[in-house]
Length: 115
Length: 109
Image (tube, rainbow over all chains, first blue to last red; front, side, top):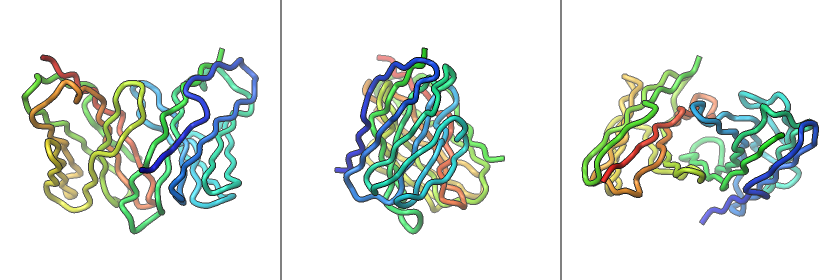
């Protein structure tokens, strides 16, 4: 079974704090993704990575950065948290970019509240 | 722009059949996914269609018409545990997933 784990299920931070969200997958997947999910908006892609040390902006990268130093780990960083970043953050991974079904496997999510 | 449309909410009765529709307009098409998401949990994969037609998997079936930009998820013999949100997502020409906002399905006894 593919396992995607996230460092925290719930997190409360203050405005201006630097926030780190960690994601680890154990199936040697090449691709990793960070989404945020807000009611009525669906999943919105923040950043993704197709390889170690590689990153690409998704639809809403502003206010976020990422790090992928190892294949299994993809970190999302909020440089200076703001209240509009209160959301559910979901990490996902998939096997390869093309030629496969590209099913994404999701972690349990981190519900971040910024006060 | 890219767009995925699905109803916001649907209600059905235990034991019945429900069809959740999804229409899409995307730059390219490399397949359509359906995911199930229970409240407070992560989405889990249900089905993948890349060719036209019906794919059946137990109580769940998914249909695709590429010419119409249309898919549906059919759930038979509904059970209370099927109460969840159902997410439609299309893999575009860049192999990125474009997500719909999801359909919340409420099952009543």
